[in-house]
Every structure is written in structure tokens, then in C-alpha cells.
Length: 309
Image 1 (cartoon, one colour):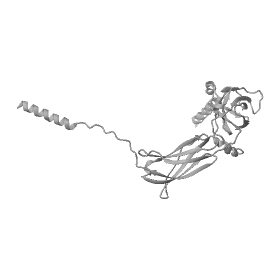
Image 2: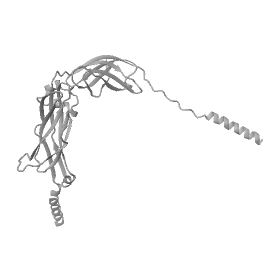
Image 3: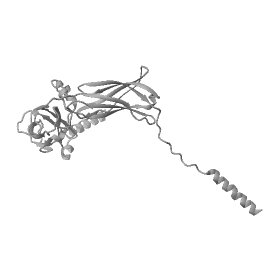
Image 4: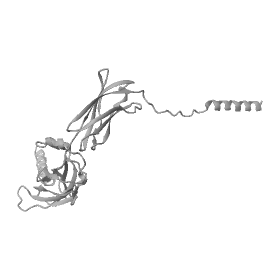
């Protein structure tokens, strides 16, 4: 019994001395506001934008700044839903110029809850041909930890909050499109495709996805969707919907197609004809001339027998 108590005692002593070595370092980066509206920007203009990094950390560390596209789910936030109907999805990352890719945050003596605050400035250069409507992008800060800092602790907790920037370009932002045609693609072996020709009839870039249901004699044969594609104003894009070819035999099928572009959708009913499978030509391998070899052997044997006799 005494031996057992002694073992427990030494185990507790070991754990107590071990605790300082398994502490966790926390590096949390926040921003002054998670959404910043830059207002209306003019085409051909250079605009200086500002935001602030904040942290409660008592240590000095480097913060990497990463610019990236903002997802359309931004408009699901309270107060921003109506912006979706005037939203341009053209790429704007190339318009954003960071003065530098990283900044250093120094702790403030007696800073309270906020240990440090760092001003970050950058430029948004709007091209002359910018589309009308609202545009969004994000800048995400991320602490850069040195190997020495990581090695001093058992674990490192890193958290960062990105800031989304919203701005408007003057003009009438129209998000709309039309399905021009639905055509069966080439069928090879067990693959079958239906091509949806979609045209952007609006004034802003939109992302579109085709959704289809195929019927035969009123019964659903198959459902499928295309990949989501960016379509520029006036552009005609082929949205390819793929199916397993074994679901279709030769004949006519009814197709219901809808194209969704986030702020709306259009639909079209069509009839397509499925042709017999087009199989690639099979190359016949040359057959080994066994018969000729057998005949030659027979002749040789006959010659040998003749000479011997």
C-alpha cells in the first residue's frame, strides 16, 4: 500500500513540473471592422483604403496580409441581402495593391484588452472598363510565427479575422441571362453529355450553373448539374451537363433545364435525340502466322525424310 502511494506521489510531482512546458501560446488577430464599405469609386481612379489590425497579445510578431476573392455568401449577412441584385462577379484582386505583404505589430504598454493596433493602408485602382455594380474582396491577416517561438511551447493557437471590402461602380448593374439552346453532345462509349448554351444578357459578370432533369415517356430518367462557370456580359458559355451513358438508349427525351445565377434563374424545356453509341475504331492486331509456320515445318520434315531414305 505504501509503495502504491509513493508511486502516485512521484507521478503528481512529475506532472506539476511538466505543466510549464506544455503551455499554449495564443496569437489572435482581429480587425477594426469585419466589413468596410469604400463607397462609390470612379473608373480610372486610384483610391487609398485603410483598416486596422488589433490584437490582445503581449508579444511582438509579424502578420502576413493575404488578398483574396470574397465568397458570394457575404450577401447572406443581415443588411447586405439586397446588394446581391446589383453585384458584379468580375475579378478585382488585380485592382488591389498592398504596400507590403506583411506588417509587424508591437505590444502597447498598459494597452488593456487591446494589446496593440496597427494601421494598414493599400490602394484600389479601378480600371476604365470596370463593370457597374457592387464589388467585394477580402484581406486576411495571419500571424507569422518563427520556429523558435513555436518550439518554446507545446501548442500554438492561431486565429485571424478577415475584413471584407465592398465598393460600388456607377452605372446600371443588370444580372440576367437566357438559355439559347440545349443540345446533346458527342456520346462515346458510356459517357453522355448535354450542352447548355447560356448567354449573359446583363451588364455584370455572373456565375452560372445548369441544372437538368431528363424524362422519357413522362418518367424521370436522370438528374444532373454542370459546374459553375463565370460568364462575362454578352458572352455565350457552354455549360456541360454529364450523365452516365448506360441510362440512355436510342430515342427522343424531354429535358427541363434551369440556369441559376445567384440572383435569379431562367429555364427552358427541350427535346433531344439520342443517337446510337459512337465507338472508336478498334485496331486489329496482326495475327501470328501459325499456319504458315506449320506448313514450313511439314515441308522441312518431308525434305529431311526424303534425303534420309
